[in-house]
Length: 83
Image (cartoon, rainbow, N blue to C red; front, top):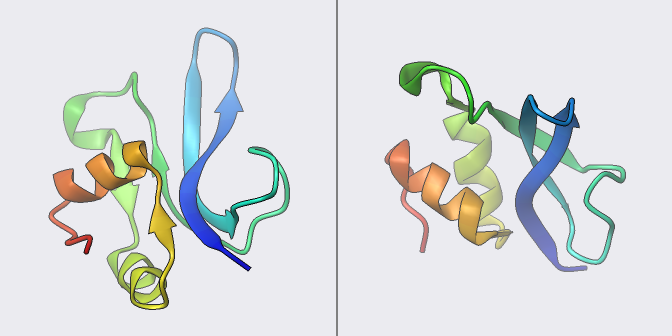
């Protein structure tokens, strides 16, 4: 099973927010997740946009989970090193 760290969409049409989740790469965007590691609110103030549990993120990255391009950039903003 290939595991990815990616975004799961919530919110209304003009007010989206996302959960940063760990899930099987073959499953649809809004299906069952393995773990939730953070939140991303793109329309919030700059300092409140990204909340990530660093311990969980590092754990899943060490287990071989591959982040999507967007999640990789969010992790880099929070200074979490991605291989």
